[in-house]
Length: 436
Image 1: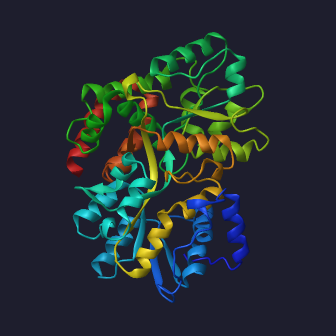
Image 2: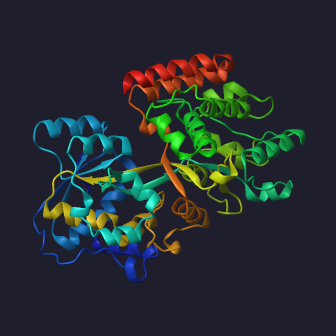
Image 3: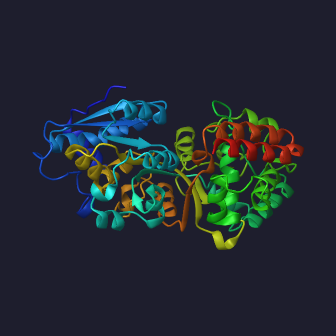
């Protein structure tokens, strides 16, 4: 994919202002002396396309204007493959944006990554980013990646004014969530919109629910060992997460459309029943990017009143604040002056604030002011992510490539036939062991 350069400097400045970057650390993005890397090029590989790619180009054009350097973007549909090809050829890109820490760990083990303590001001990074988020980019005590774009996978979308009108309260625990579901059914209404969803990789959203149930019941140590295939999927606590998932998916009256609804509804369509009038379902477990689906389908809804979210409640109350996430990590493969300047810019509060102002984006940089976000729901998402005590990437994003599609397909089969649970867990244990 060719890089798109924004030619109108005034538009960049306007977007930064719209992001709420009005003073201090979040003034218009600059990186210091423009002569330091003038005329140089930074070669970047990543997955982003469409609106994500456009927003990235808009933000990084400020760095180009300030430095006189150029960002050369290589869009990829398989970052791991493309990076391996270039590394083997002795031509790594300067910078890459990785979709998960699993790939970061593989590249770090190969010696392909430059430790960021050699690139960034370590004290500044520690001030800007919560420790739980820096841990995601750390291998054997070395920081190799910083999360530059974050998504919560532990959100449930709902209509606050409808919940208030029906006398419900936001559940604090898993048991509270089931009690709310039971009360909703008793009132003649449907509690959940739940989707596989339909389309490529169908089943991924169901694995996200299970991963959050493992983290929120078993804790980070068991979660990490499960992801690493150090314990079997038949481990009692892991198995209980699947049982709890089936309680949500298969209890009569709980899910709109039942099994067919789960298997034939897209992720964007899944929000619609929650915000129709009259409401067809009350709750939608889906990652935080669902806010974009809501605002696209219901542009007149007031954020925080007409629509909102609450954190997926933990099974163990002591694990409140343990959150599964998705995100993109920036890494350096070739330590050039342009790469240093560019990554310093990208992880800094000015660029992060400008990015936030474009919408559809959550930063975990603590110096980005709350008013950089255009609505209270986006602000609450950022606060929830930055305040998380324990942060783990979604399990499927960390497991070997052979495991993820088997798990996706297994979840689709499971909602159709729950009696296959133990056979599925045994099969996934074997798949995970073989892929180690």
